[in-house]
Image 1 (cartoon, rainbow, N blue to C red):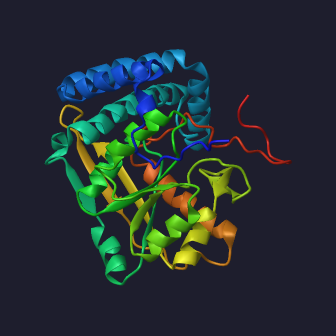
Image 2: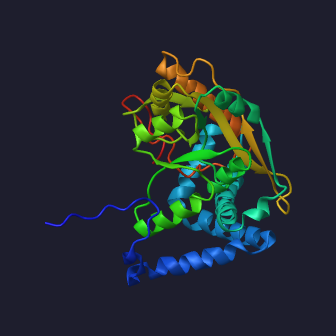
Image 3: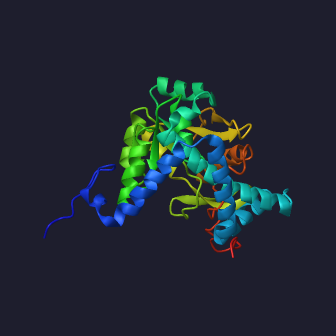
Length: 312
């Protein structure tokens, strides 16, 4: 029996030319055209698409509304609705920003600034790797491009189910990230950290409690990933909180990257306290630009016995 050949990430396969993939090729050409449109037109299209997504993606809308109700109880119902709509618009804007980062990166020239770069440089100068603890921002890979203007980041990624999409995204990301590390490749992650690399890692979603604990997120108990503690222990790397966001006039947006000091005593001998610390940084960052986060994910879906259900 012949074995199915294994392909390296980003490797072209002749099967990608079969008719079943033609729709994706056409879509990619369309996206490349969108990437060269003027920003004002990109923003108008993103706003229109975001409003459509808010209207028709009912399940995602309900999830985002519930998340914002819980995390920002000081908001009125009208504020929750308006900010939920903006979450969908920001997600669509983020898609255009990512297309610009992939196909038209010169658009970002003169729009990017950074704070706290010395924290990363000091760690690497001392021979340590850096685990950049970040969020699932609506900026998507545009955020990685912002960082790449000042330092050389790697990324942890999940392969796409569609092999053609996986190849195309991998190749586009190769222009931003020096290394793309499969989320299941723990040895690769540790090796790159031991080699002094800076790796963007986002432990902000609900993946259950096999590698996590219940820790408060905006005061609501949430399954919080703690796998990064093991990475830090094995690699002797440091953890540095990372945040990037868009601000200013939307007609001429600016982008900021924020790096905070390396976390002392991370990991500690208390898994829960470490999770609480990380979530507190996430809360601090999310209050800067609340709608530039993927609130349509079920952040509170894991509810062990004794915890009330969040989503109906």
